[in-house]
Image (cartoon, rainbow, N blue to C red):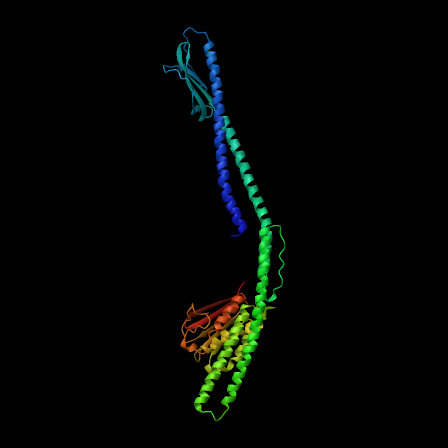
Length: 422
């Protein structure tokens, strides 16, 4: 979830209870104020009625009047000093329904006779008024909430614009094409600090990259030279006829180990170059000719094991790979399929615009998933001639250049599949 969306949601979660509590408070206050005003009107009416009844001259009068809004009748109850108020509902014939009223009740004394005086005021109009006020309040609060949310969203988007611009600049960086990154100056202190830190960090990363690139290039040159010299000297020694069989065997073992060391050195340097993305992808490469080239190079090995090759190659498949990486991918996967196959086995190669799959038979079981792409891991004793970097290099190349590398073992066959990430 984006920061701006999260901020808006948190703001909404805070404002909704506040607006709800405010609306509830105002609703109660309106009801109380209206009830207070109604009670005052009832008290005023009561005073007018008492004055009128006190001034009426009747010999031993006994009043008994009853209407929905006015009721007076004799009672034996004692005189009350204060009136009582309550809400009641009275049946209304025209509407055939009960209507809400506010009622005042008090026992008063008139001409030496106690009477219970009951006055009522309809609350229908006031209830309608409250409903109208509540609707207006809800509309106003809803409009205010929407306005605040939209305003907060636009303001936050404007405030965070420099951050997203800096983020875009960082996301577009490429180590092999890294130049000085210019971050715009903003009027926000924190963003200026962030941009300064990012600028310093990218400069250090670029310098480290250049140092690493120089180191790998120097190491490739400096280490291969003495290895080649040592191999040449051993080859000369092997031509010496005065050597005993035991001496020749020792020299052969040393020569084999030097060759293995040379391959290991080459693969480690290659791995470092891939990790540093020193193979830029300038254009898409047709992969079918690369596969055909290595099938031709491995032709002797294929014939020696009498392997059956079944291939389905799309000539229009172009992949985003550097030529050196395409060679590396095909030579490792196809070389393993040949090397660990058994005589008269099969190899199936399928190539489309997005998928390369190489399936080979083998007497070896499934490669454990936790050791499949780890460096220097040998899953079977028959892998002893391997330096343990082939699949690790292919995996590192796939990760660095947005390819997906999958493996499964099914029906006695090893399935390696490479997919171009969309």
